[in-house]
Length: 526
Image (cartoon, rainbow, N blue to C red):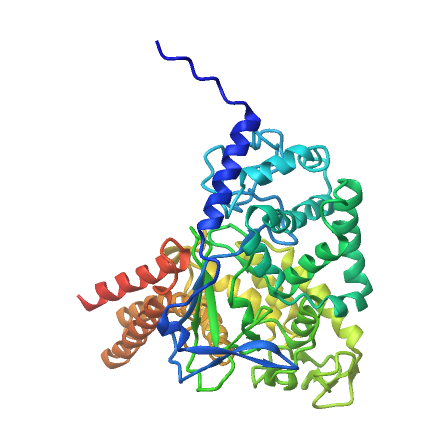
């Protein structure tokens, strides 16, 4: 009779899983090697001003795939609300929320696809948090303040990287080779003290890890994340990642590349968004492209520690888009813009009279209006319309805060109860078309050609044009020739949005929108 097998202890099971994960990490390629056709597209250059950056080896056409690579490290965003450590979908801190049996952290479910995966909640991480349960999971409850929750989730990716020292030392070494700007960060007292208190002192003193991790390496990792990480996410998931080579792209507020991420593997897919000349640097935007220069430059300096001086930032009109223009409250005719856009403290002045605002006055005004917008539910059509009416005498029509409200309305009209296409009035349909056209005109300047944002707004634009054309044709308001011109525009919009959005990863909302555009185009051809 065969001997009975002894049941493995929990510790033995964790050790076996950790050994398995270490073996997986060791079998991963140690150096990221691009396919030959990608290697020939660009090369690495270096300058005192930009450090290492990528330059096109030849002329590149819009839509060329430049980089496709999986993350070296991934975790919740720095300012995260509670998310699952396996898949980064939102979770709650309520008592009924499922929690990891090993460490007690909130998870989406026991069947989360990210459980015990290198890109999710590994057994090594679980064992670490189990040892520090009193400082972590037990603090994540419904009584925790937003700041307490944020501070704990901010630690997750830092701890994951530190655990790579033993789990995947070559991977950790590659991360440590990234730029951290530690010396510049020391000069920023607010930033340095934030990490000294919330990361270094908490881990080394409160969690008693001083013998395991030094203050220097923790500050280095914090800097590496600030300077090099990408924020990604599909279908509600939100995470930040470090990639092997994508961090080498330089910044520009009118970039020539765009990127997306695979919802399953979290791999980054980085493509040219427009034609790139030979010898031209490859660029992406470190900030939201449609934000105004004043706030955009502040955001970049706060995280990346430099003041952007690109062509767009240097132009008071932002390349003719006027997306930072304020309406003059004195003469009612002029527009107020920065007098010296590359000087953050410079006054703003009206172009029609002598009225001026200080930079601090502009900042307070923008913060107040932005707070008002963020307090509005993105699906509340009347509230968004009221926001536009309330601030149309304060902000010019192309101002980025009004554009943000219009973009939300472009996506909400036709999708929420009470404003579905059959329920919309002719005025609402015409308003959706107008907002789409206004938004598209700005995107065509700031994110031209093969950008995801441009494709989305083109898809949104096709429906109101089609509906109005059909109704006007039926009522005799359009001639046959005028109707055919409208239909031709609809087909062009569908064709272009389908072409761009089908480059998005399968399973993403944008890819499905691309398929829907292609299907609508086929139905129109039949």
